Length: 95
Image 1 (tube, helix red, strand yellow):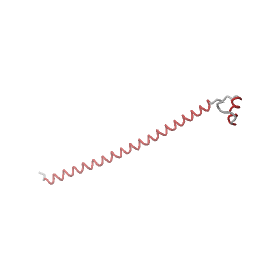
Image 2: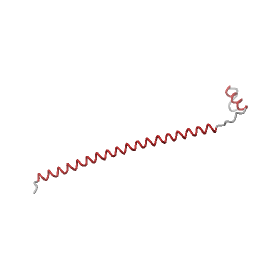
Image 3: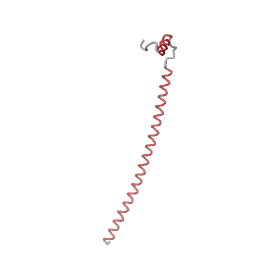
Image 4: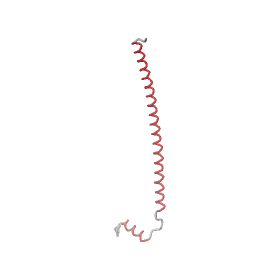
């Protein structure tokens, strides 16, 4: 039969081994968690860059459309004369 001190020692050793295993598992879990966080941040940055590039391309396309769709017909002589009078301050823009 085992003596009480031997049983206590065995219980203490089992408890210690269990704590060691838990500490190692906690270490692994934290490493996994940090790896997932890093991967998520990298993915978010990549997707943000793609979205911003797409938005910039769309803005450029809209600007090009606006320039292409601008009135390319020659201005009438009355409109040119009116603008020049306004620029010279000889008449108000409302007139």
